[in-house]
Length: 410
Ligand code: APR
Ligand code: PHB
Image 1 (cartoon, rainbow, N blue to C red):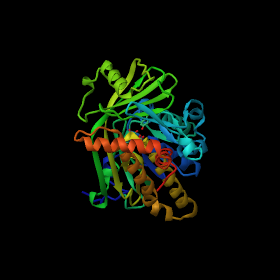
Image 2 (image 1 turned 120 degrees about the vertical axis):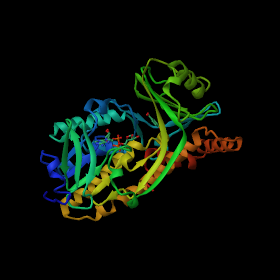
Image 3 (image 1 turned 90 degrees about the horizontal axis):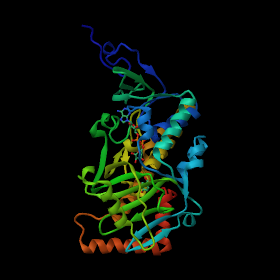
Image 4 (image 1 turned 30 degrees about the horizontal axis):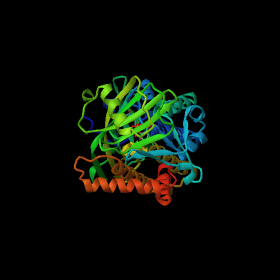
């Protein structure tokens, strides 16, 4: 038998009769990170192929985060993909913190020199990016599951994937692992090359989408003795709400009536009525903080949830994914444009400052607003004191505001 030593270029060719597809940047995952990266690369004349293991329909319907920072919106506008976002997205200049039976507004724009946030569903961002990419002739392969990455330390890394039931290979000059927390990219890096920082929270969020006009104009975060609740929205006709539940709870324990009762109790303040309506979608998501360092292994670069997770309380997840993609596109642009790899070498460091600031902010918001199973009255007094402080001191509310809108980069 002929002995072929597997390398990135000739890896097991006899097992795979279809010749490998070639591109400059192989992108795994068509979430916000992968799609923004594909667009920004195309703008710089750099070729990419996106592999996405789900169907187009699935990724365009999957209900997820919904808050965009000003900086993310500015980037999407500069990419020419914000036409629908500007039409349908909801601009917000403040958020409300509710506790002790009263609401307290944090005037985000006033405290940050005019910055706003935009409420626009992640799946809408994904929909807009996919359409624009395909209209431009970009390649996104749906139902193409990456199963392994080889040769990350060579000049020609290869992504093995399955498509239409067949094993295939995509050969890139670089690989961008944008495949979320449960993707294949991070796991393909030897554990000895990574340091993991991980924290799980002893609760989860039950999130729902309901066909009812929002009961409040702004996003409301409620601290309550029964647990945290959040009121958000997706459109003038659609409300998005969350309620803190035990981490191992199942949806069976939450018939619609119980969810509305619990939300009503936790969000209650004098003069506020929570309108209920048909629940279109509901799910339970665990809460976690997670960072892997570095976000790079040779020519494999991790971006977005593949490298870090934040609990959703700070509304940072989608923004971090978009920001990583922007940094990576600039670095690859410098490589292909000026032959300069300084930005690629710095990619992980350049991202991690912002990532850790968002990690801290998200952890802090989570700790301030949730009921912990082992809380004692002392701990609860501390939470209330913190809430009174951030809603009454201009210095403290400015700190919350600049982190929330994403001005403070750290
Ligand atoms: N092969 C191909 N695609 C994959 C694979 C795989 N092996 N594994 C996962 N994917 C796809 C997922 O189906 C998903 O569409 O990668 C994509 C990753 O997208 P996201 O999970 O949205 O991650 P990211 O782009 O980093 O955006 C982060 O998503 O989870 C939210 O709160 C988070 O808002 C944040 C955002
Ligand atoms: C949402 O609208 O889905 C949302 C809003 C604020 C958060 C998290 C999620 O902190």
